[in-house]
Amino acid sequence: MRDGGLEAAIKAVGGVGALARALGISQPSVSNWQRIPPERVIAVETLTGIGRHQLRPDLYPEARSSIKAAMEQALAEAEARAAPETDEMDRLRAAEYGLLALLLFKVPTADVLAKVAALKGDASPLGMAHLALAEAARVTTVDAVNCEFFDLFIGVGRGELLPYGSYYLTGFLHERPLAEVRAAFVALGVVRDDSSKEPEDHIGLLCDVMAGLALRRFGDGYDGEKAFFEAHVKPWAQRFFADLEMVRNKPFYSAVGAVGRLFMDIETEAFAFAA
Image (tube, rainbow, N blue to C red; front, side):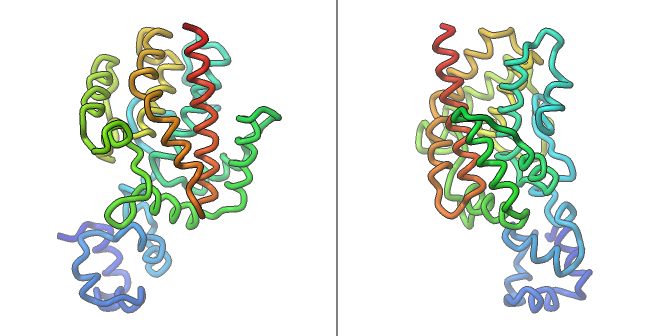
C-alpha cells in the first residue's frame, strides 16, 4: 500500500507512468514503490512542487523530534533550557553534544546549515574544527548534504557507516549494548517521543542524552553523567567519529567527524582527570 506522500506525488503529475517518465525510470519501478526512495525525494519534490516534508516526513520532519532530552537547535536553546545551577562549561558541553545530535540524527535543513555556517572558533584544535565545519556548511547545499547523509547512514541496503553502539562493539545490530542503553534510559527516566524508530544506541540519541545530563535536566548529577558516558559513549564513539572524519568525498560530514572526534577526546580526558 502506497503512503500518502507517494500518492500525492503521483496525483500531482497525472499518474504512475507520468512520474516514471519524468524521473527517467521504468513504470514498473515506480509501481513497486510503497513510498518514495530517499535518493528520489529531492527530484520528486522538484517535479511535483510537493515539499519533502510531505513526501517523506520520516526523513524530513517539519521540526526535529527526538527523545525528551533532545536539544532542538543549537547553543541559544540549550542555554535557555539549562538548570539555573548549570555552569558555563556544562552549557557549552551540552551545546556541543546538541550540535552533533542535530547533524547526525536527521538530514540538516537549510536553517540548520545556516546556523552551522555561523559557528565561531579559536586557535584550539576544536575551535579550528568548528571553523572548518562552518566553512563546509557555507559552501555546501541542502541537496549535497542530503546525498552525503543518505550514502553514509541509509544507503541502498545499508549505508557506509552504521552509527550504532551495538555494531561498533559487537559487529552486529540489536545486541547486548542496545539492551544496556535501553536499561539506562529507564533508570534515567528518559522517554522517547520521536517516530524515527531508530535504536536507542544511535550516536545521535546518545549525544542528546549527554546534552540533557550536562544540563542536569535528568540524572543524579556528575556521577550519573560520567557513568553514562563511560558505559555507552566512550567505548565506541571516538572510533565512529574517526571513521566519519576519514570518509571520502563527503566534505560536510567529514568535518562533523573531526569535531566529534576532538570533542570525544576532550570529554574522555576530562572525565579521567576528574577521577
